[in-house]
Length: 400
Image (cartoon, rainbow, N blue to C red):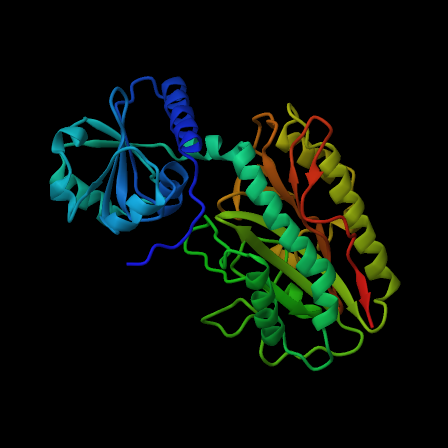
């Protein structure tokens, strides 16, 4: 088989991640003996390859990555020091899973998989390691930040420069989405927008004209979308065509070699929107900038959220962060290997921010008869406040 040139995750990066995991497990779960990683995103984080297998991390001995498929690809893609093949769980050394208590990704491991593991290995109790992994993934290394910055550059170019050139009267939301996807891929986008939210799918994001940007959706975000059909409620509608005077709402994820950024841009097609829409949009941009100024190490996400919400008038809060009953109770979310990571700028997130955490901030507000206005960009937490890595356009671009 012909070898293909790829950029491998450095071994030093993988070693640092494993060391951080062991450290936080020692701090939070001093009785831990064994951790089992099965979900593909976390396997990629710790091994640098996304294969079907399981990573066993004993407390006091060497971690082993057991791979069912593809063992050959794992060896080629990953510099991980110990990779072993398995055809089934029978091939895994049972001594390694003989602990009474095993730590697993309880948000990812299904009941049937749990029962299958118990069939082959003599453990009797499972505890969660989801929060520990989420914590170490929330603080990005220099390597991770460089990948996110590359994603941000693609995002900035496509939404701020390319979109105004491809908007034309009569184009459908779905056709615009496919054109955007092609441009993103050609610019280096890794091809998918990944979410951690259970049973959530996305290809590119929300591409909407007018009030379709307020259409109710199962997705936990402030923007809405009609989508292709009830079975595929995303991408964009084939029937809704762009016409003069429309608001164009584009909220899409981008990614580079696994790491995402998130960005929303609003456009006015061929004529300005009513003053109320322009004023509301500009207010959302100011809110984004105020939140960004508070993205400093030591600040508390829940306090940032409460400060912003307390500063907004009851009238403005109507349809803020979603239309009607679809409003959400956050102002921004962590981002990285997934679009939706922790921490979140919301109540209940009381741990201090750390330098090099990354957030997508997205203050938005629905306006009846017009659509969803607002903005979203991705920021890095720094001592000087949030560093925007997806472009500084305030949006609401008039496209002739």
